[in-house]
Length: 187
Image (cartoon, rainbow, N blue to C red; front, top):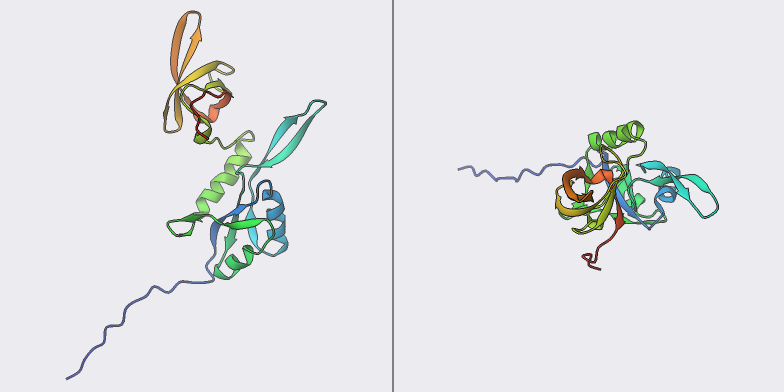
């Protein structure tokens, strides 16, 4: 009588397989961390955009990160631990208990969009509440001011009070800049 032992089948992980992960950095250290990672031989990507800053005496074009406190790294399991020891790195961004993996095509899309849309920026929904006064940055109602009535995904339902009537429209959140914050925000 022969007995067969059941051996569990484990999926062997390829420790040399590189994946795009997200590193969380100290505030305003994104470009420094990017430079230090590259000096360490670690492939990384810190998407940046050019903006014009106005000070009291001058205007100056500066380069700022697209994502505050985030840098993407293309690492394998061995490089992953090395990346944590770079000055300015606070850790990896986690999703469901594991470092968040970003697909290659998402990184490619970010690169392509930055080339095609020079004025691209990331807008946080956390900064927008019902009752805020906002200004439209682009589109048919450019430079119009309105109040936020409702937030629906990435679109905002707004009201414009002009000429004794109300015009209600949906506007993409990317085309808005917050002008006056209502008292609805929680600290």
